[in-house]
Image (cartoon, rainbow, N blue to C red; front, side, top):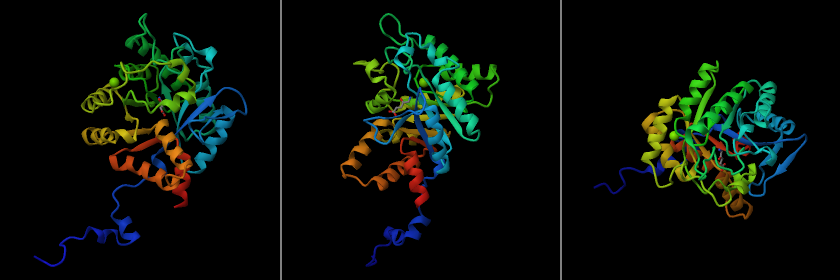
Length: 331
Ligand SMILES: NCC(=O)CCC(=O)O
Ligand SMILES: [Mg+2]
């Protein structure tokens, strides 16, 4: 027996250049997707109490903000419209209005910045009076196939407006297949689908519902009969496999940090482009700790995002995208 340890892992941590030489994961600006909230009007900028430093932008302001973020190197944006209350209905027809807010925002962005990628949210919850993600029957149950028919119309209206990627986020069964087929038939062969394949019925979405104004609509309700049970992991793989087979180009796991095990299993099992959403609740709890001085803001933002890369994510939707891009630039 030698009097020294045979292996000293600490040697590889001795200097910063050695640590960088052996580091296994790297976060770059190309991994970041910036989710943004859009409102009606001109010259409007609204803050969101539960999401410090995140704003709702009217389209003109959105363009200014996107320009700033492009200058920091982020080129992919996910848009979420805030629907005025008087446009919400039981049949959610505003979702596929060619002149709707989301459609106008996509058009304006793609006209101004043809090289960015715009991801649109394909789901009905911003457009229904009850805040559920679909059409409901007399018992309040969200009807799957009837909802999918509306999602198809919504996705087509987004593609027509110029969306590069449509992202169905509602967890109806079979909607990826239906949307893919419609896109093909209507000549949108190069419009990609990013499927929210494993979206959990999570309580981390609260601040997002404040941001888009659907918290009041959903009241005491929940989405447990279509979004996934946080207890399940094998089921996530089955959901992901279905979406891949139905034509998804990319898949997503959501929320992010509490579900990194799902990200890892997905990437290992399927090797497809895999994304994770660091959701509003994750953002809010980080911001709350930063505001209290309990966590170091810059370091924790970067650590939280690197963890997604280590788990196997190809990219992250994060409200910290702008801040992270700034930090990456400063490095
Ligand atoms: N369909 C998009 C979301 O539900 C986002 C959730 C969040 O950021 O909490
Ligand atoms: Mg599914």
